[in-house]
Length: 438
Ligand code: HAM
Image (cartoon, rainbow, N blue to C red; front, top):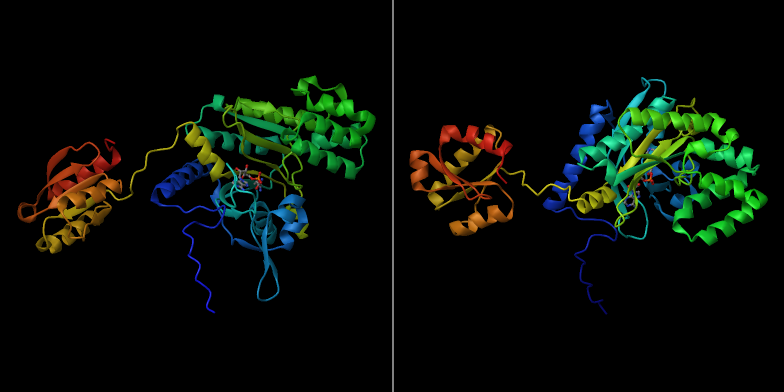
């Protein structure tokens, strides 16, 4: 018996999005702001395939992402393949591959789409785009401060005010010094406790204490003193004198000198990935309605070395489009949709078609994006189409316009009309395109 054909779903695959022109407009807006800021700091763009050999992620990403969140499969040739869940292993591979030819320090950026098998929820999807900004071959606090300053500058370029977000910062070296040297934990216990600290904000306080106590025993109080320190100045002398806390202090000072004043030392900030080796940071929305991490990054000095080449230090961050879009919506910082089509040509009857084509070509040559209505529907319907598509201007061409070559240029947002001669159209239009009265 033939199976009844299942109706095809209209929905995109779970946790992914369709980008209709309005959403694409927002996406392009977000990307263009990101690009403008990073290019201003001297970063250049790179890209790679979404497919990588699975082994790449086993080397150093962190267990959760590999065991639970990757889209992995075996290809027809028997290779284990993974759709990239993040860009850092790929860029580290690319740097290692041309280690000898590249002129360090590198300042690189990319805006890849990434796939993670997560439970879709606010701010978390299965496919997202992520601006990756990374510097390779530079050690020292100035490089750390630069990438954090870029992160902050992007927020400001979107119109965010410093009082509406916060940069939380910590140091893995400092935490490791505390756990290994001060508390005397074994490497295994230190790793376990850092994973626990990473989850601290998401669990009840009592539960954290019980689990932490089981690992740290009588040194529990020292761990809590550290986590509740508030500022670097509250540390014990031994901790305060350690190079890692002095370095972190210098990163914070350098940021303040660069005009980034909303930086907060956050001793419980770990960031999940195992490859981070130094400064780690995360940008938070501080609104009580949307109090969440927006994006983050840190220093990873050992990742390039896993490919068997000399070590190349790296530092950078990943800024996701989903959390960013939510943030911009919350603070009403998204621009209103505007079509990239500048003008729509409507016609009264078919006889004007050759003239309209000629007019359209002329306008296009002048850099004006021009669409033509071929529908043959009523004029009012043609105009409605332009309005609904967000096209700012129309010209209706009838026998008289074709003859006199004078047109009524209509601004659909303001309903203003202006008589313009053919040869004056480009100047009038480009002025209007640059300063639309919308
Ligand atoms: P991550 O913290 O896993 O770091 O991701 C960075 C940002 O990407 C997140 O803070 C969030 O904005 C966005 N993001 C991650 N997963 C999702 C998701 N499922 N849905 C929506 N947005 C998401 C990294 O990926 C590091 N590789 C970043 C990095 C670059 N570190 C140094 N360089």
